[in-house]
Image (tube, rainbow, N blue to C red):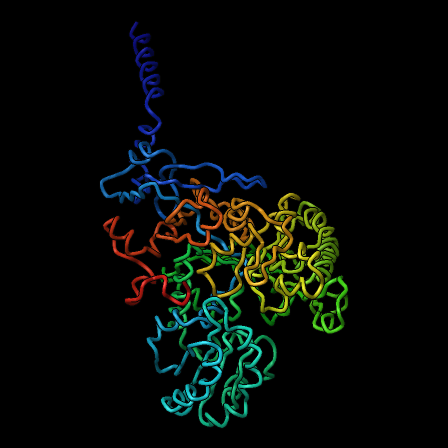
Length: 611
């Protein structure tokens, strides 16, 4: 009788426990594990947890609980708020839309730190012992007319031997780019720089990381590191030469640049560091806990010995929460050669990098044969993509890889400004490759290989080879997103450009069949980007166990009119549950302090150069 009574009690306890609301059971579990540090609630949290090729964002929640930088749980308001402990911070977003932070799979934040003035000004405060620097202002004619006098004034301020640095500004809308780029080589000469600054090393930039002018003193300093003055040295001048031995200062400049991008919801990058010293500076930020974003880095250097490549292959996907290896690329990336016919002067400008028998082709094959992955690589024309796929097939076969092993690598090529052509897409799918697409090319009209120039050079009917996101999506090939310019303030415009493919300057729609809806564009920026960076289990969507990397928008990007998408503003950005950007108005509403670039000085946030 006693045993029967005990069993009855056990049944009743189990029944009552089973009848307890799920949130009550979760609360008990959270008490055992520790309460969440933060609960975001009363929001429209778009998880982007559907990685399919359909126009579905996946689940949408009202609230999420965050602990130790990761998402503990997501759901409706009541059960999530019930998880709160005495010290849990509650953030009421009043119905605002939340998205996973954006991932750009080909970006150069280390370059952009010296291609726009805000990060430098934030750290260097207009001048320091390292260098005297100036940014030109005004329209192209004013800059071209004043650069010499501005440089003379900077040289007069510098100590003998101190670096003097001057940059043109091609404008917030790149409105001065064409004229400055055309005139720069004729106006700024080494002889003129030697005359102005015989005792100081001088670098004058046309704004872009590439295409600078140096005087003789500068070349003397550069040759200490680059004796032959050859290779991609422009990208290494600041980190390797000017800031040599000043790693802490360089780190703070890179941090400030990443904070600018975070203010637009962009916190994760696929990139090469383009300099060992940049890598050291980023690693320093990581060690001291000051990285405002995450970087999946691709090796790009001067040493491609097989043993190093084999070691790198073993490190794929490994690293810290903020920096990890995603692949490798050759120093000279993919070329612009195409299978299309064109005028002789157009064909003369084309170049191939991966032709059989070339050094680059051998290096690509070595990377693949060693078990490595091609990622974050520049590319241009469809012919070189043919060669790239030939190399993947050949080297993988020689390494004894199965098709499943090849596909698991997720080899990729970036930009997609002239590839893939339609018949390449099935082969890309078969190899398990990914394609990073540069919607910026749909907006620009001054670059040699933007879509407008492609139409002019080869025919408008071939613009469907440029960023063919609809075709790749239909073929179930994941595409990702890039800007590849210091233009974070245009990220929502570039989403719209992918939807419309309309160029405001030429008044043309390029390859309307390659337009997609906004959800496919957002998948490229979030979910699929996580796959490109080999960390789909941690980034790209808002799900239990993933990093709490999210942004709060000022309007619902899923429902607003298409024309309103470029006007979207990011009110708050968090990385690992830490606020890295918070606009003053929302900060006041939440009873918090503003964070990020809005606190740098008295200017309104949207007046910053990078906004």
